[in-house]
Length: 115
Image 1 (cartoon, helix red, strand yellow):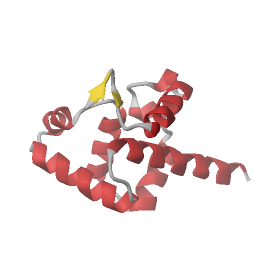
Image 2 (image 1 turned 30 degrees about the vertical axis):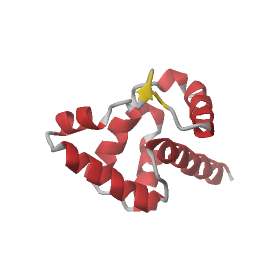
Image 3 (image 1 turned 45 degrees about the horizontal axis):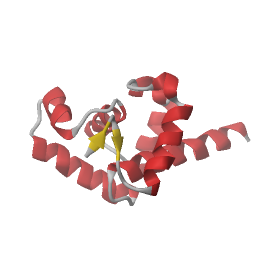
């Protein structure tokens, strides 16, 4: 469960807190957290559908599964199924790992663009 918007998963929590603090100005606005090109890079890397991208962006805005389902007018279990598929593609087991992995992908993308 989330406490103050932060998921409790041991040492991964610290990594997520550090990432959140570095991006504090972008909190709760997924569209601003990553640039359009960075979101496209994530989509291309994992071949995510538009629906999966919508779900990811809502996750990055801090929404829980039930709120995502309401916002997208889909069933709660459909959201859970999407996250299950996302986890498999990214190679993670939970949302904290997912967020950390996506930040890592974007950092790698940023470094490649600077070179």
